[in-house]
Image 1 (cartoon, rainbow, N blue to C red):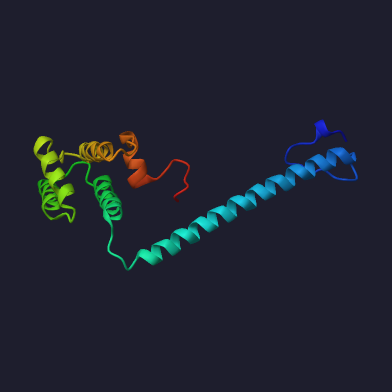
Image 2: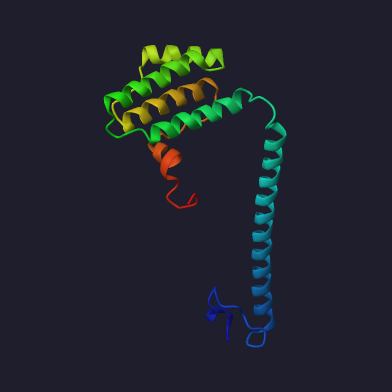
Length: 170
């Protein structure tokens, strides 16, 4: 059997192949296995470090970055599940949420910035799409001020409701 006749998924038989062909195939298999193992070890180590880090800081009050991430997660997730056609009560409740947040948010600079933003550009509460677009624009304005990357607003529902199309979150 010649090496060009061996399919990629077929394991090379040492008896059926010349030694050099078998040796190449085995090296490829070993390299692939080593890369896979390295990836698993790296992922596992990263998860352990993240868990340890979280456990060490769980008893500490959140810093501004932790609070900000948690708040954006809450707001974007809430907007992603906001009704497509909200009732008058839904609109009133969402307006109250943003108004209250702009008054009570623990970071006074952030609260002030939200109040100013809402005066210039009030929350768009007439549909799920409008609210998500408004919130993404506000978040990207904050990201710009903090010199962070901007979020692609066309992926809001993918990020905060449905997950990526590859099913990796299922």
